[in-house]
Amino acid sequence: MQTRITESPEEAALILNRGGLVAFPTETVYGLGAGINFPEAVEGIFRAKGRPSDNPLIVHVANVEQLETAVSEISRDARRLMERFFPGPLTLVLEKSGRVPYSVTAGLDTVGIRCPAHPVAHEFLSLSRCPVAAPSANRSGRPSATSWEAVMEDLDGRIDCILKGEASRIGLESTIVDCTGEAPVMLRAGAVGLEELQQVAPRTTAAGPAREGETPRSPGLKYPHYAPRATVVALEAGEKRKPQGASAYIGIGQAPDGTALARRCGNLDDYARELFGFFRECDRRGIRTIYCELPPETGIGRALRDRIRRAAGGH
Ligand code: AMP
Ligand code: MG
Image: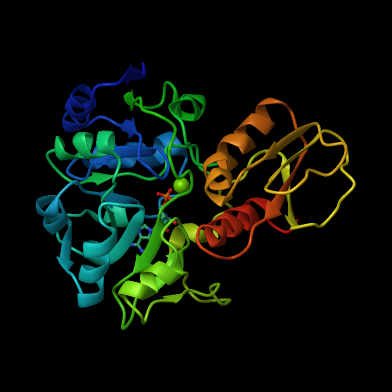
């Protein structure tokens, strides 16, 4: 399959509305979209990514009309969170409507809904004739794509179109909040911090790790995510290691002596924006070990720690 690259949201939406697979920029990471009314295209997402079929897709909407197509019930807390954070880097898990096929939600009766703030994403989505199911536009298990070049690296020849835009401003996936229970539960950390959620919905808590034998509330979170080929080692701030072999460092502080590639970020937002691109650069350069400084657990620091820990596995 030839992958068409375009900067035109109209052209990309035409391809989507004919049942095509289209990668598009958002403020978090690039998404790989299919209209939820096209079952074959939805299946195509799982095939193109090599994504396990029990990992549900987030449904993207541009407006209230598309939102109402996809969900059957919106709790008071959910409504308040939407009023404050939509459009933006937040996904809400709500009861799904009959219009959302189970292939999108991996058999669940709930659906993750997001309304991106990115102007190109917004234009593209508003030209779609139905809500758009879209996971991150990377091969499964690889770091999420934060630039169109990263989408090319993983999916060229496997999808119909890439809507080319700038590199993602945030660089980490959306915050996910489950609004189907008694009180909202943050399932995945992101740019919208727990403290901010609690300002709007004070009863919001962060999900602990799933206990043994328990079904995880967010199926995708059980998979080893965001991992480069290199071994990732998480370092507490100030912790020193003696780099072994071809190694790299990313963080706010000073790199350990002897690293072949070092990226010092000015602040936590830069760190978040650069992390996944840096992982990919390290893989291209044949780096074997990547040392990542763990930032403090506030604001987007919580999301960064989460992604670094996942990429590090046990290291
Ligand atoms: P990605 O878009 O690649 O970041 O993956 C989507 C993430 O959202 C996965 O971790 C899913 O488990 C999670 N997700 C999507 N829909 C739901 C849902 N209905 N309930 C809980 N988690 C969900
Ligand atoms: Mg993903």
